[in-house]
Amino acid sequence: MARNKQEDSNNLSLKDTLDADMLQKLQQRKKELSEQEESNKEKARQQRLEEKRRKEANKSFAELFEESDQDWQNYK
Image 1 (spheres, rainbow, N blue to C red):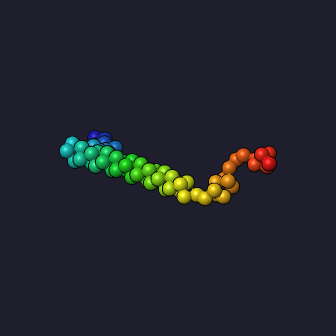
Image 2: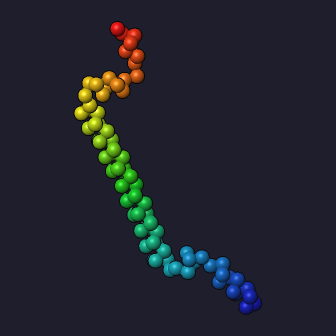
């Protein structure tokens, strides 16, 4: 019987040993951190898009011409 009790205590997880209030607080914190991470990713994506838009607006005709996919030799 002592062996059975020891096996039960070894099989307990951290979730089982924490009280419900503490577990809820940790889960809430985890949710907040994941939301914050998603928000940071979205801000970074928006910043990259804005930077790309600014670069596009400041390109010279020569840069736009070089990036063009059309074969301009056909239009001579």
